[in-house]
Length: 134
Image (cartoon, rainbow, N blue to C red; front, side):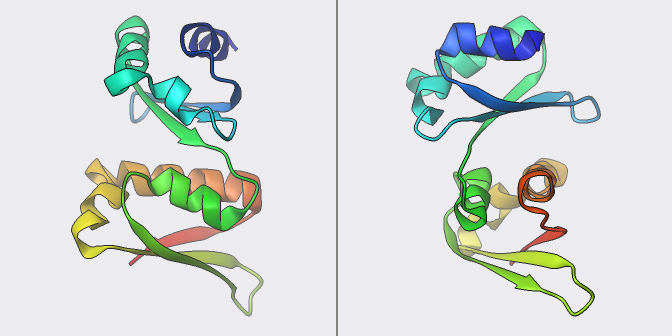
């Protein structure tokens, strides 16, 4: 709650969710649709200020009600060609995100951080068991 209050006071953006990733030493905020620019600030100034204040990396994802849009937002700034959601015979839901080849590294992130973030929120909000990046 303390991190959410600090984030909202500094950025003016409305936070829907916050995840503290101790393993990755980062805070991940989900902001309401349309608030991503406000949250980041000009040239990332608000994010940089927050990072200095909390001593952790700060990541921001824009919320969307539709799973395909949310997954695209979570993988940003990578160029996502398409996202398909399929249901396996065993009942598991899987999302397959096709990424532009030159952006695959950005989508996956260092040590798979971005892919892990996308999987976490896909499961949390949309009951999608896995996100595969191709």
